[in-house]
Length: 583
Image (cartoon, rainbow, N blue to C red):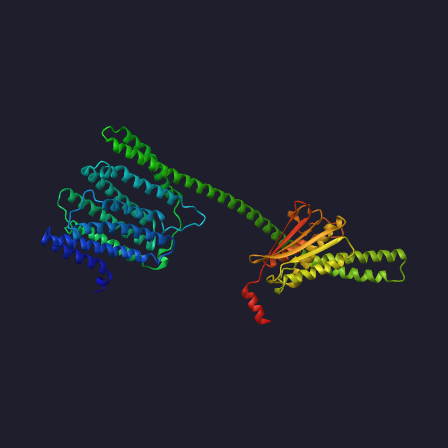
């Protein structure tokens, strides 16, 4: 019983076909068999088409388009059977020859080919143009051309039923074989759920190709009638298509797209499209030099070739246009990737410099701090001693002054070498910048230096250390003030605004600019005179920005002056919610 439930489709199909075979053999060519055969085929095809339509709303993306195309092909096939049933059951007339449904029957495989060309089993790259799909469309155009060139003239231009029937049967059989072959190739390349669907479509198509050929051979010998035993393989193929549509109702992970194939496999469609295009002039020459062909057929076939060449020209123009766009996109992406690689390489080198130098100076600074403390203490005692002469006291004061300067340098070294990240909290960048700018405005009061701050309102807060960021911004503005002081005065502009999820700060000045922007964050690099700078301020600022998950860069303006750009990530909603809850 479990086996019957699991394979209900196979047992049900076998039972119906066996029962109908007995009826067909018992009654022979009778109205009951003809009417019953048409109705049975039409009902089966309606069920097959409805099962395919049922998959459309449940699918997404390329899978949805795939089942729309499969449904379209099955709908055309069912329409042909409906016309057949209309003539034999309702009108009770034999089918005309040629039959208008022949065109519908031939074209019903075209949506199948388009569905296979879509390749829903392959992962789709959003930035990759689907040139293979365009090539398959060119092949579909060529296939429509072949029907119009070979079959249609004897069907309607200069009617020749024998030639038309023979040409149609051969071409339709080739079309079925090609469809089955492409489905088989797709089944070999697919995985999981798609492999199962493709294999079932392949087997159903192959069975239908054999059934169609046997039916056409029986029609040519005058042995065929609707409902005869020749319909049994045809009905079995319809049932198989119905079962295939039901098989698509599986787990979503079984129908997930797989990675794209190797390049050699993707070149098949363009090469076939090229061969199809090259075949058009050859067929035109055959039609032109075939003296046995009536002039009306020759002219029609030549016009068909010209129209198809125009269609191929449009496809080639579109393909070249898309290829040009793809090349431009790749060039822009390569340029962007190269710039990013250079930036990352610079950052890695800078971080390695800071890390190795930090370890070195940390030990040295601690060792220097102890003797410096003694030198400061003794030099202060000497300078205050009354037993020393004026020259000796002046020398002791110079020693004390230089020891203080050395002590400041050691403090800078220890600050630079500090590895432990500071405690962070949510900071209002606008408020912090106002404090920094106000501090510096007091220092430049009475000098020809102007500091302007422009901060966007309602800036998101930043998760950081208030002290470290204050000192970092102070260092940048101090350097800008030193730069404009060299020119006898100038302007320092500070701005803050939000870009996506980042706070972007810009510090620009009207000074002479930076001599070597690439080296400005290197430890001990300074352009200031000896005694006025250690070259560690901007290096420490760089480390602070890295610790805060941000980035700092600088460049010279085309007109004059330098710009420092700081990017800090804005605090997330979760961080703001936690800070608000704990406040």
